[in-house]
Amino acid sequence: MSSLTLDLDTVHLTDEQFYQLCQNNRNLKFERTTKGQLIIMSPVGGESGNREADLIIDLGIWNRQTGLGYVFSSSTIFKLPNGADRSPDVAWIQLERWEALTPEQRRKFPPIAPDFVIELRSATDDLVMLHSKMTEYMDAGVRLGWLINPQQQQVEIYRQQQEIEVRNLPTQLSGEDVLPGFNLSLSCY
Image (cartoon, rainbow, N blue to C red; front, side):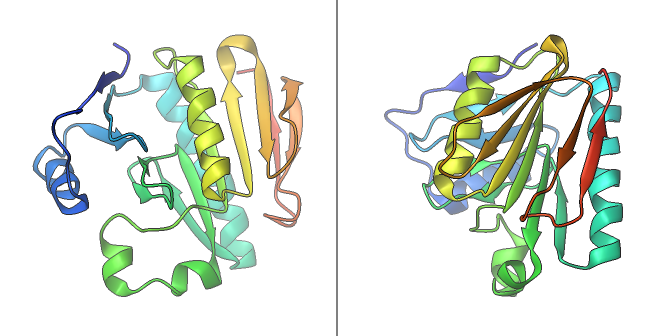
């Protein structure tokens, strides 16, 4: 099953109503676009879940060694500056930016764009939708993003104010100046 997008033209959910919808339906994963469309995401299978966990582990180990920020899983929804509520598969926020949020902002859906995101395409993900989501992240201020596409054995690298770079797998990725010293070796998925 792929995701389901509901156009709520006549219904506008406030941020609090969207938060309560998510809390009351914890077995479902929601996102919301800048246009207010409600997206109900399907769960991923075992292979995608394992790959996502490996990505979080790799980034988490680097982050523990450097202490430069905070790592987040796909269960975290971020309230982006453009009004969208998005949940990347892996996210990282610089320490100072995260700690500048109030405890209340950290507890709910943090009103902040991550510095770094990874989207891992699962078998049910629509590539056009993922491209749109990555563009939305960059427009919201994400500094570096990777879209890993096992189906086409590629990774797309998104950077602020630059063309998208496409690499074939296997490849070595660098966290560049966003994640200094972080390197990720991607073998064939």
